[in-house]
Length: 599
Ligand SMILES: Nc1ncnc2c1ncn2[C@@H]1O[C@H](COP(=O)(O)OP(=O)(O)OP(=O)(O)O)[C@@H](O)[C@H]1O
Image 1: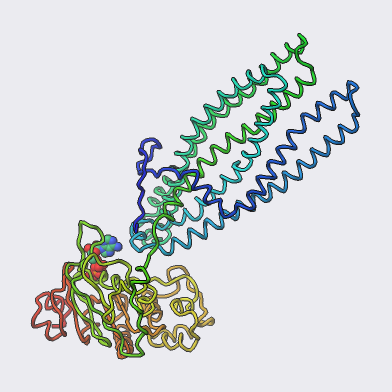
Image 2: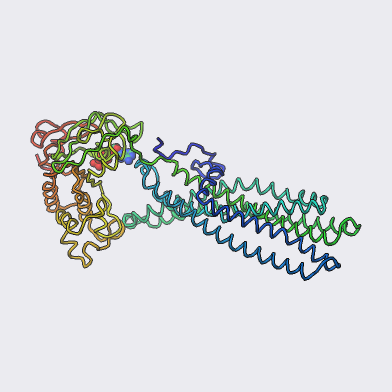
């Protein structure tokens, strides 16, 4: 299972001027796979495009008939009526095709965004540790739009165009092979230059998308930390940083424009050259009688027809290549395996959650590292009896939060085992493990939305009475009642409208609402004053009679009453026991306690 975003295939960074390793563009078949679910309507669009191409090809032949009818061959009125009918039919077919194509393109964006969002929220936690949120967001917003341009920017038109091109070619070879030879000679100069240049355009567009991703990450970083940035007087520097990222995207766009600026005159010259050559040589051949005027005009009309799809085709190459660059960024995320459980056959039967008393937790020789070269937990063992309260204390960086993250199965231990009620957590589906746990992470976020949205996150069906009950338990009910909208009071991003302590208490209410038998609290009282802290500690204490509680705390006052205190240092358990015992037996605990005037 892949659980990190890998970029196995990279190109040399200096090709694009970017210092970051570049993803290889997605292969064309990946784009075709993406289009797969819209294949029915795309077949219709392609058919319409082919019909449109056929109708277009008929037009020069009809003009030939009109010219011939002026010379006395057949009815002019009939030929003209037929031409008008064909032109009208071709417009109608074109309009229907355009609409279906645009609708399909929107559908493509929709399904790509849905797939990405579905996947993005299920990636292993490790991936979010290494990826920037803004960049992930820009893949959903901007890269999907780029893929859309592959369709609307000519992929389908190019198919109809190919028919017009081939049809024109056949007609032209029948009319005058010599003239056709001259035309192709000149046009191939344009073709070669476009194909060479489009590879470069593809790399540059991908770099532009990467730059847009970095810009989005930068904006996200700046907006989410706007107070800190303002207070630090760093606004101007952040603005400069972001405008540099925007400048990068601009730079790549300008480089694409530069290539385009050289490219289009070359193709324009080739097209003009072929017209002039056909007019010159064709005029000469009309003069010496080897070609009729009607055939020369028809040939020139077919030349027009051939050149138009050529333009479409060149444009399609460029947009499809740019889209493949963006698709590589989408595929990179889709290729990461989402969080997965063990083969169901090997899973233990999840036991029903006990009615009361909580569940037991056991760590046996647990090893863990976020990075292979830096072990974070080394042989951690301890047992938390059901219904007891265990505090985990120790200096910063000791691995306390990691212990809770492993119980939640955000990461897998690299050695040893974690058991819930005697069952290895790896043998339980993650959803079952998590449904039994109420978890308050360190700096737990408040989600934008109402107070109710926040409380019922894990239990969307609970009623107002239960919401009020848990809000009362964390001493927030009076705050809710003071607001005219009560539970429906809207909180801004990051819980704007609440104090730091209120946010923390709301997070605890969220963990309490499900009545989960195991409560994991990571520094739940960090931003509380000592009076509120005491109230909250009492609240936690009152709910702890019915469940197992594990609480990480720096403030020992919170945990003095715990049934067991596990002291960690540098990824190891150095002591475990009750407060009074540890004061006598653990030097580290005594130091921690002395600092807080508890000894
Ligand atoms: N997501 C992560 N990726 C890489 N390293 C991490 C990650 N989270 C924590 N670490 C590292 O793992 C070690 C233990 O971190 P952890 O957060 O578990 O410590 P802690 O005891 O909870 O610290 P604190 O009391 O400061 O919260 C630290 O060295 C930290 O730098």
